[in-house]
Amino acid sequence: MKPIKLLAIGNSFSVDAVEYLRNIALSEGVNILIGNLYIGGCPLERHWNNAMQDSHDYCYYRFAEETTATNDAGLLETIKSEEWDYITLQQASYASGQFETYEPYLTRLSAFVKENAPQAEQLIHQTWAYEIDSDHGGFASYGNDQKTMFKCLKDAYGRAAELLHARTIPCGEAVQLARSTALFDYANGGKPLNRDGFHASIPHGRYLLGIVWYETLIGKPLVGTYRPDDHCNPISQSEAEILRKCAHQAVTMYR
Image (cartoon, rainbow, N blue to C red; front, top):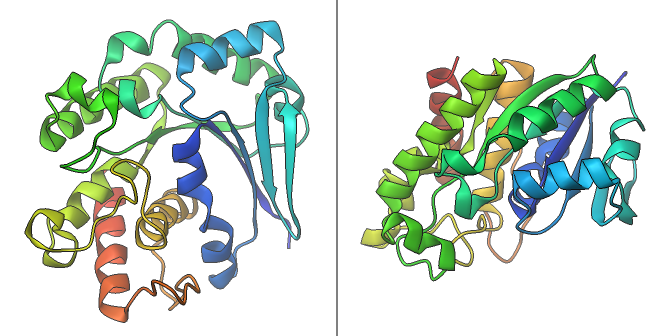
């Protein structure tokens, strides 16, 4: 089976987003080769500067038949290492709701990617708002208010997608939809979808994100029964059903 080839250019939020994606896809009979090129907390400005300077300070995870990790990877060499079908771009989470931080770096980075991987469809990875009690320093830019942060990042990522004429992977939307359900209403005793106030919880948050990516890329919802094998914190059937429903609803909203 010829794999679909996906490269995420991101940070720790792209790590969260693609951690379960390959296994989700394989459970549906779809083979996805995933590359995740990241630096923790990396904003678009730094990605662009790295491209211009050919900096080799990325960690590169490659998920295929075997998973490999490479330190000191470079942007250009990784883009050219495969015939990627999809390449995703995103802003650092703390700046996700501040569109003025996207430009001119987003359009320049997009042009760089197009020049070196003209066959790849570029997508915008919409990240998510922090938990209501997050102590992340960047939360202050949004008044330490989750709804404000989500509103701002939704607007900024929407403008970014319009600028590039690109589709959106609506992770932030899916997370917010899940938070509106009783099972994941953290403010009222539900399970949090963040493990530290901002990164996705393991396995529930990462599972939700993986489903959003799968449905966006493949164009159809997850129909099987796959759930990550986590004996310490298993996902119940009812939780899985809610997360799948929220992922599907979010993707449908952005079609």
